[in-house]
Length: 132
Image (cartoon, rainbow, N blue to C red; front, side, top):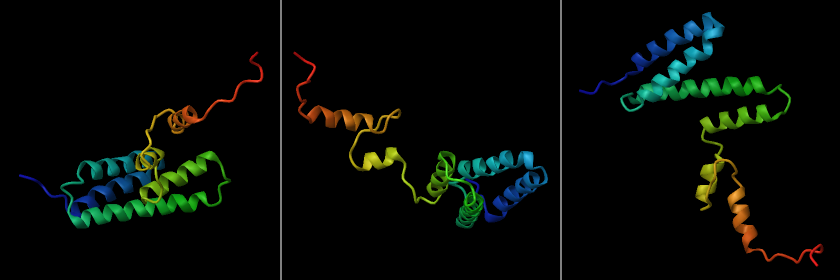
């Protein structure tokens, strides 16, 4: 027997944890993570309304973070956060996915190393001026 997670079920779960997180800001991250974990673990049995509610919740959180970053000076951390936000909206690619779509191999430690080595192997080498 498969149980369905309804909109009402999900709202009750999420609202309880959000209230706890808002009441104690030190716990907000953990409570929000519980909501995300619950949604991911129960994605299949969630009905369409519950899924839509979750998507809306993610969009609201992403927009809140995005607005908070507007006045932050440009930095690698800010760009990383903006890429993560764009990723939740499927508006940003990951290098691994991008390279796979281009038909290139991907190596976790260096996105460009393997394509560079493959390219470099095809380029004729000039004789070294230091060689005698």
